[in-house]
View (tube, helix red, strand yellow):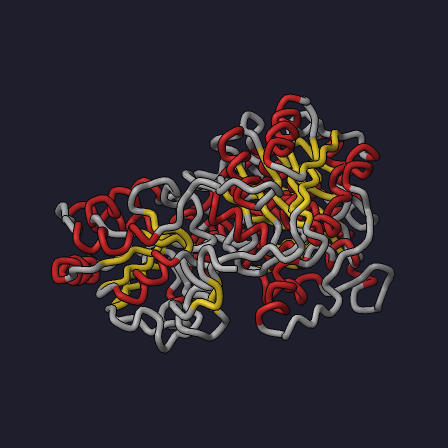
Length: 570
């Protein structure tokens, strides 16, 4: 049947079962927003304060729900404001479709008002970027975009429509095809070879080789990476770990892929990894990394990383194999499928002696008494009063403390920027998570430096009545940078002290939200309890010592057990 081109865009969103879109309108995308007005009973639009906030919200929605997120923005500065959010999604393999519009065909390439080469900018930080010049191609391009975003190793896709393509007089042929069927259409088949729309089937011989390596191992270690979370392979991974009876180290992106409270968990691995995880990595004889790309924050010194072990990497993306760390064996495939094949043949092992050596190195889980508020006390209050809450973090010390002291037990519970390290990610991601999970509690954990980068999204929290609790680790400094200045740069605190406003309580009140301040654990307990019950969004300003540090810490480029700071050190 014949329908408007913009109507086809909306219908294609409905094909993909999209019910929520995050965005910010502007001139070139007005035709699309005008059509969205007609679909407001079917597709909810969330208007953020800034395009970057919309990008992070769509990303947080995708990570927390397992669905593809969707974000709208206009041309020029609207599109370029998305780039940080696109790169954040790309580095962390989050499936988001970004829909932008550009100037009309007659104005293209003439430095027209708000014109920019959106697809050119997006190409290095997306799985695919489409410039749509012909309205007749809209259905195929839309279907391709969603298929590419969600298939194989997930990631962001950009679709940039020329404004004339979305004009009111553009009529196209369209047939509604539910997303479960539309990968069989011609356009999708054409893309299949270049975008791996089907997950690679693991090689059975490769699986059998690993099973034999396991049989010969006495000191195995598992690493739970982001691929376990993205692939929702958590149940298969847990079965594998328990049958292997081996310690499990967790990367930043692997949070929620294996229960943080599980007896086999050794905690985070890498630069701020626990002593148990890092020592296990150094002393194990077999290292099995699932969905882990061995980033420079995990394998700080590739030459000495797991130096006593045979290294096995399981990943869906062939490009990650041997990219950062040379492996002794690898299996290409989705984490869930590979683990299922392993579990079919894996017997029950007993590595008691190895566990008794490693597991006692784990740090105590209970916060020590202190007259002043500590990060561990703050996070213990959150964990006890809001068990199972989704936690969205920004980047820095508070991020590392959160991963260290909170227990993440399911995929999508931890939302954090691991690969790109994006300050300002947290509040947008929390908004997306709350929209996608209205029945769950969402807590935004941030630092005073990060919060200044995204606090304007409090207006979004208030307008949509989202009960998000923002907990600010307020130490009056860019804490992680100051920590490096303390330890490596001779205490030369160049431009890291944040001796300035705003007053976060007054800021919360200015946006119509509740504001609280805590300087001790009892004050934190009271403030968080009030925030939980107030029925609106809230901000808790938690005052910390300026020189509070993340422990342990290994310097970049050093062997994983060369701790600059150890647990409990001064």
